[in-house]
Length: 321
Image (cartoon, rainbow, N blue to C red; front, side):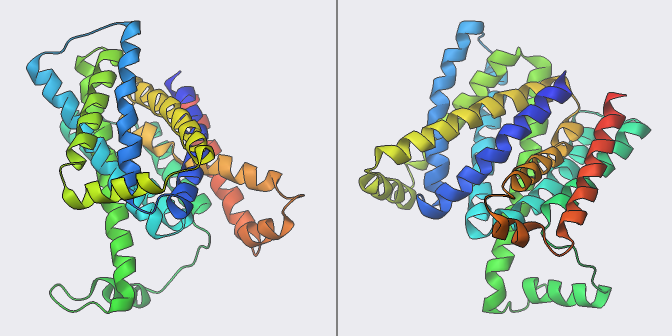
């Protein structure tokens, strides 16, 4: 059951992150501001207590709030990376690293392990997701890779050329967001292991809400939010934003439930299914937008993505049989 719920949540997220990219590029140009508007709606999760109110102990409450704060920090780095570059560059980095980080963190802190069959499916899911998400697959000699790495990061204490600083920031923000995503998944799994699902979920959302209030205490961040609010005059944009956030909330609740029931590393590795849904959408646009399709799946890229989708389908079959 958790497998179906996780896949459904990634299906919804496939559309949500595209909308997030549009909003970050066209409407809201600050990751702090966008994370604030996303986090502030966490207060409405209190309505979920109609399904069962639960009061945690002080220790449990602190852990819940910490999980919520960690998720807000994750959003800031994720939106920062998403704003800096195309989603096709950011998503592969984060999508590949999250399950790897989740696997090690869940093993160390939760004692979760995978069977041989599950580990093989986990490995196949990651590689399938990378093949789908990366626009072009190229193989470089080790020397060339090392040269590019040095250009981006420089020597340990050396100078980094200005032209590579944006790439460095993109990689750092993507890696940090992936690590934070994984840490959140593991921490919230711990919460669900010791608390009722609704109670742990709602109180962790209050941690995210608390974090958005703390953002207002930073003068520069508060100024960005106020300035954006003064320029937000179009109700249509607000309706679009709210619609996206409702869908994102649905997907987030479903993903959290899947984490509470399943293995953290496997749930995070299922993100590759999200890329499969995106491919289907692109192919459905073939008749109306042929030029777009040619740019996105031409020149052998479609074959690469079909192979990736096949790998993901194979891994899913291994998990359900």
